Amino acid sequence: MPSVFDSPVIRYGISLVNAAVIAIIAFVLLEGTIRWVALGIAALEIIVTPQILKHAE
Image (cartoon, rainbow, N blue to C red; front, side, top):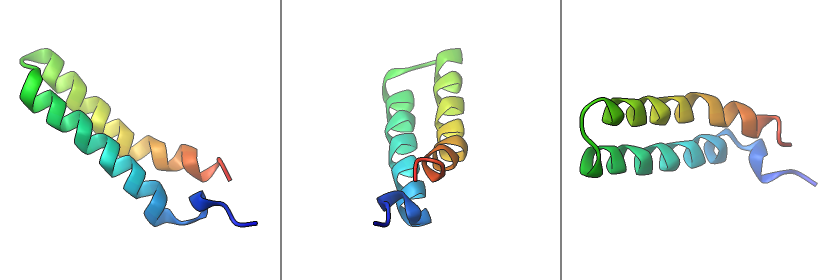
């Protein structure tokens, strides 16, 4: 039975939604260095999460 994570659209979609939430929180609630750290985490989310989900098949 095929996994939901077989589709790259799903893998990257999940990642983009998570990164968008992190970025919104960073811009609305955080300031200074911690904002940049949160935005870095959002960037890593876009790059790393799809690779992890690819192996979750």
